[in-house]
Image (cartoon, rainbow, N blue to C red; front, side):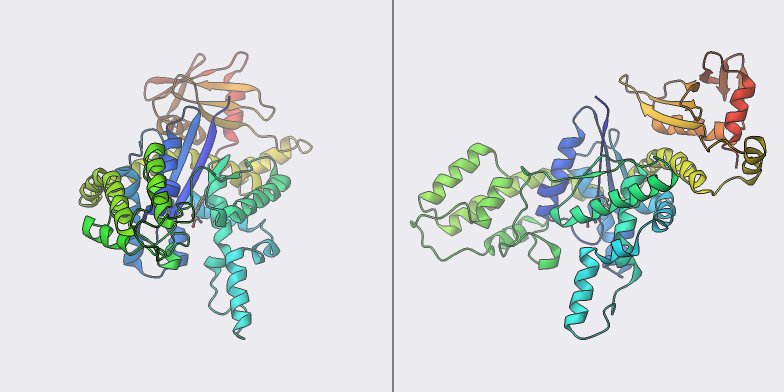
Amino acid sequence: MSVQRVLTGITTSGTPHLGNYAGAIRPAIAASRHPGVESFYFLADYHALIKTTDPLRVQRSTLEIAATWLAAGLDTGRVWFYRQSDIPEIPELTWLLTCVAGKGLLNRAHAYKAAVDKNTADGVDPDAGVNMGLYMYPVLMAADILMFKAHSVPVGRDQIQHIEMARDIAGSFNHLYGEHFVLPEAAIDASVATLPGLDGRKMSKSYDNTIPLFAPPAELKKLIFSIVTDSKAPGEPKDAEGSALFQLYQAFSTPEEARAMRTAFDEGIAWGEAKQALFERIEAAVAPMRERYQALVAEPAQIERHLHEGAAKARALATPFLAELRHAVGLRNLATAVQAVAAAPAKSAALPQFKQYREADGRFYFKLVDGDGRLLLQGAGFDSPREAGRCVAALKQGGAVALAGTELRLDDAVVATLADGVGEAELRAALAAFAD
Ligand code: TRP
């Protein structure tokens, strides 16, 4: 079975709440532990600039959301965990995608359309108060996803249209320039409930009905006791199914505990008692994480370190891929382009390619294939994608790499071997295609 790439981002414009945790972070961390899955989880801070113009809010939220992922047990050695704005290839890719994205497609984006509809209803200019960030939001999101060739994107239902737009834009690019992008799919996990908020509607910052994940116990308790219920008296049977209180309880308990609570509802548990039980359940689940969270937030430099490592790991993939895309659209080294035209005017642009991948032995490999997919150079196994990426970059730049027989050396270590029947001249010719 081939590796499944899963990618999702959280916009860094708010304080993480119970809904973010149970609906996104907790299932994502569980999924990242499955074998055969490569997970990419990132902080969508460029997207935050579309939601708020308060710099302190963006900074604070980025810190809080990063600390939440780590406190919740994300293993950064296993996943790609990074901050969007640390990857300059993402805005660059956004431009390449912008040039193939239909304006009509973006006109139909729900968030933009809602703004236009509201303006029209209010009798003002349709685009009043709409900035290009809001309009381009789906293209930036497509770049996030397509950059890392994600197969599957776990999101809430409100984001499905964005994934479809990413597919659409990827399809247009592939059609024009060749099959560079993987077409992603939205993954909506039916077993992960959307948590209700204090008023029974979906827990969301836009409804102002959230319970912050790491609220101090006293505040947590106060908020839980403010959850809206009906006016049934103690002893009257209560309907668990329609109850926000019960759904929250269920999200933080084992199936047995949930079953016992359902029986208690049938038997007429008092609302005050049910709220106390919910508070105790959530507090038990959150308390150990809260402690780790507070320690992390107190040491932001350590979080920065995690993010920088994550960015290097992500860029080991993004940098070579963007080089391939730049070449595909014609942003090329002029000398090689002229030579290619002079030498082989009729030949289509089937270019050599570096491929990076991970083997079952857990190590990171690269190889160089020619335009027809024939193996030219096989890289050795590396401990990290970063080291493999460093070799690829060195080869592309043509420096510091020495060939001895069929062995290629970088800093005195053998990093790759020529494939059978491939000579130095052929290798040099292939590498010249990458020269910048
Ligand atoms: N738009 C997403 C949200 O608000 C956040 C996001 C940005 C995202 N880029 C992404 C989600 C890429 C998944 C994939 O929830």
